[in-house]
Length: 294
Length: 294
Image 1: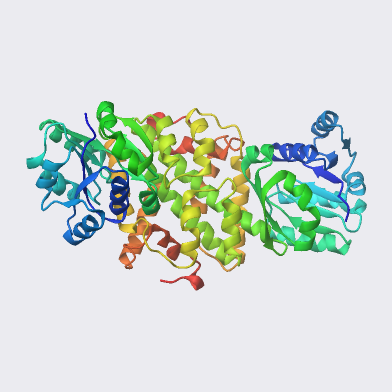
Image 2: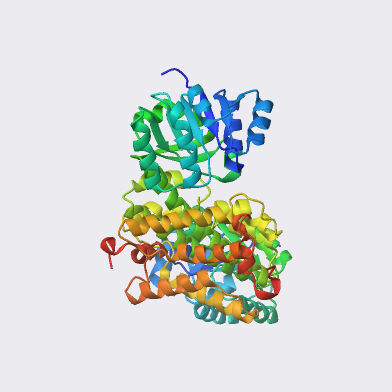
């Protein structure tokens, strides 16, 4: 297969960075976005085409990368792509959706002679911007090899997890871990504030020991300054954790107390109007009463 | 002050590594351990002296490093050192004890013209072995500078946190974070097992994204092989979390739901005979029923 022309759909906080990196590596040929202005602006800047509708993008690309927020958004986008899909086209969905959703789209595209890979990513908006995402891929290994070039422009780590859906199942593992880490880091830093410690130094030294983690290094300082610009939104992580809960139930059930704690806390943040903030806003409800912002 | 002769007390999982690194850097002159055989064996191997009692060690060292498990052990050791302490001696306690305990010993030693620094560490047995610990120091900054040489043989990161007790308060932050991370990683990996994922690949890819953390990288594979050699013991982390709970209450109170969840889980592990295992044994009680070991 010759180098595929790549179309990109979904220019949000993650998608914008990924599309820019695809362009920088010479892959990007056409974009589409639900809010058209964002697509027009980026296309003008980069000198690539804007599709008037997903069907047109489908006709112009052999590899289509999607980055949307929810199962329903993915459904709308892929339904709209279908009439234009050329047999052999590979749709790489970097969104976080259910493993069942990924498997269903994989079957649906196979009926048209096209391929679907679930390619969810982790690494935050900064990972998308720097092209250093970690990507967990479900689907056929040979199909992954066909699009490894463009995917490598977005992700520093690409791991084939197994058949369709296994990328999303791995992302669910990632999201459970990220939830518990957010609970841990916000509770620990709120405790440090209560102790009156110099928090910059706390982050400096704790980051070098056995509690070291990405979230502390990337969100520790900003959360202590009450800056909760996403990053990763509370409402989206809440949605992901509901998917995890459903997947566990469908697999016969296991207790997920960390997930349940985080869902409760995110629900409270959303009720109080903080759903569009970064998940580090969890520190709002961890703080001792006198320091509490809410 | 000329280069201080260093005495080391407490040759456990952490202390043994730290003492070896002090020796390798030319600082170690004398050791003492409650279980005398361990001290005799190490001293024979390294060619350093063994003190018959802590008093003798106090008379032979200007810098004394202690590494014990509990407040009561520290009390016994420092009480035993007191009669031999030379004015100007610096006791560097790398144990994890309460901030109040550290402050009390600092006052007590000051009455004798000696100094006490709380120098708790993080980085696990591997950090102790490699001399790459993170050390959080409470006490007078000038006193820390007097012993920075020997401390640097054990720790790659040394941060002065503030007055006496602030090293221990920082360690409490670290231990709360480590608890929540252990809950998060074990729950997420148990979920991945339930999903039937190839877990080596899960660890590989998740370690490169926004859920990356020390505990996953250092304990992920071993816990999936049911290997729970400490590392860091459940019973000791349980003790540390009780200290955190007391410190929060003494400071006017704040909710610590992550700490309470972990205390409950550790309590169950201890009841079931797993208190001397590594804290990654938490995965025992996270597993879905059919995969459960207990």
